Image (cartoon, rainbow, N blue to C red; front, side, top):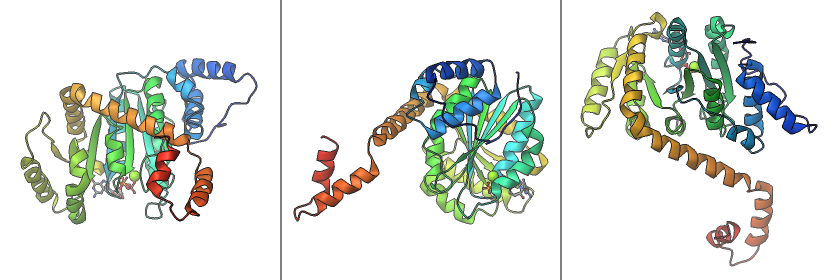
Length: 323
Ligand SMILES: Nc1nc2c(ncn2[C@@H]2O[C@H](COP(=O)(O)OP(=O)(O)OP(=O)(O)O)[C@@H](O)[C@H]2O)c(=O)[nH]1
Ligand SMILES: [Mg+2]
């Protein structure tokens, strides 16, 4: 692949000049399909900064069906980045091409985490078969950006074998990642007292694989047993969620993770894919419709309407949405 110089999250010009815009876009796509990482970065920036303006570009992409999209989620500090680092090493050893998407946690709790990731991933930054990109989470705590579906499709079209996406598992983000990833890994650690509670409310629903990381620490085996019991109580389904004990810092059980990811993709690809696609379609349609709503304009209209004593929000919304 030519020009494989990794640029991480470097922002290239977000919009193309007005001058021969169409030509530029065609040229950009040509370069993209020639394997230019610069074109890839530029296309991602375009999609991130102007999603509606890049719809025609996106509809000209041919997302590769071979890419495996793997979501890695879990509480802060559970070892997601370390695990991804170890996974990337394994994949490179197999001659695979990998994209890593880190959702840049802008929350004060996780500030600086990305810097740590950079240092850890340093050896991969210059590797020709690895592309690392961070996406700003734009306020949604650890969650995915509105454009992450599009960004992942761009990466698929570029021809990566694996796309690994890290998000911090708080609130909605884990649900979002499940609608994006073919296989979702939920990473827990032995000290996971609170997370066990969270499992009931979210993580349990989205996990395709449970990882008990930091298994060099006390309590790992016990946590794995608790998880297995919880899973045992669930109604039987086509996929039995495995629990894997790993030590990411020592590269332990990384091979087992990949074995299970492959099993999972074979077992549920036919079953889960229509749901994933429908869920992505729903999100794209929803965000496209919301783009038509101008918040400032909405505020003005609400202000004007609310001045009347008989203001009713639901009637207002009905009129506004034309129903
Ligand atoms: N003992 C031990 N420490 C680990 C293991 N895996 C990761 N760590 C350490 O745990 C710390 C956090 O690891 P990260 O990979 O940054 O965790 P993360 O989940 O990506 O963290 P955030 O991105 O901040 O949510 C680091 O100091 C790692 O070296 C492990 O298997 N055993
Ligand atoms: Mg991390």
